[in-house]
Length: 252
Length: 95
Image (cartoon, rainbow over all chains, first blue to last red; front, side, top):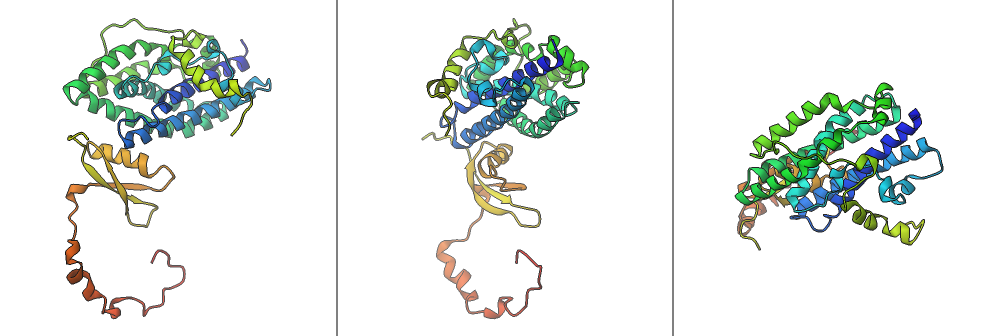
């Protein structure tokens, strides 16, 4: 694998992560539990879709085959999406959406802090803008985890169920293969192994304050980075891609 | 309507350094920290602010509208209280 191929693959992975979880959050538009939260979730969705746009643009340039960011976002098949399984999981109740975001934000926070120092200038620039957005997302999801976990009996029970269910998807965020090896060696991306302990320390501190617990052991799912997804992604893509598939090249 | 509504908060935004915080509206939130978060999301989406204050609406003490006459009308006839007899030096903004 060449450095260029590795860079393209990496950009797709991270763009797909942001696009898919951003799309999931956008499903809350008009359905938020209260007006304030409806706006908060769609704000975060817009941040994430904006991040995806920047990453797809760069990916299209790196690939250099005449595809645009829209082609990459809207016109690939399910197996060609490289997002982690966590981000495609359905919204569930508000608490489940928050827990999914909580795991994701804590990972992204540490990952993008490393990306800010990337030797690839364009990635460093994207990361510098993105890290500010992520810090707010992190604050939003963490505050909610604490309030739902340490809230009423029902909110505690429901959010604990979501923590248990979604914790199966945590390890996959730390997946690495030769793509990562090449880019770590070049100083383009951080080595996720180095902050895995910190990640767990960070989320466990908040979960403890929220009177919640990660399950002691949980079978860890993976496959997303290879394009092998859970059954939920196909439905999501059907909706995401509908307009471009039905009216190719349409703009508005 | 649920009877257990979150308390109402009044939101004040400082649009830039040097200006004072201005009342922009209200919102509901479970506690003070969430009220600041919500205010950020609801009232600063278009770069409206550099600082946020929130005050629980129940803590705002207001004047009684029926007292408006005795409270405010006596000032109407005191034109000499207005600083209209001074020239504002050039370059002074926000006065």
